[in-house]
Length: 69
Image (cartoon, rainbow, N blue to C red; front, side):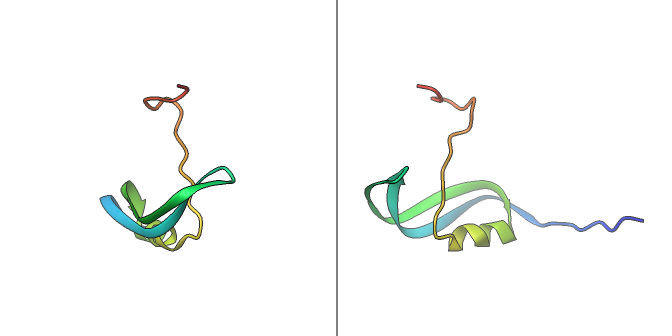
C-alpha cells in the first residue's frame, strides 16, 4: 500500500520580496525599494524558499504574449 502525502497549496498570493537589485544577465540596471509578485500557485514550503532566496530569476515562458518580439 502506498502512503499518500497531501501537500497544501496556496493560490493567488502576493509575495513581498523587499529591496532588490535589478539585473539583466550580469548587467546591473538599478535598484528597487520593494518588489512584490503575485504567485498563481505554490506550496507553503516553496513560498518560504522564494521569500528567503538571495537571487530570483524571472524567465518568460514560451508561447506567452510578447515572446520572441
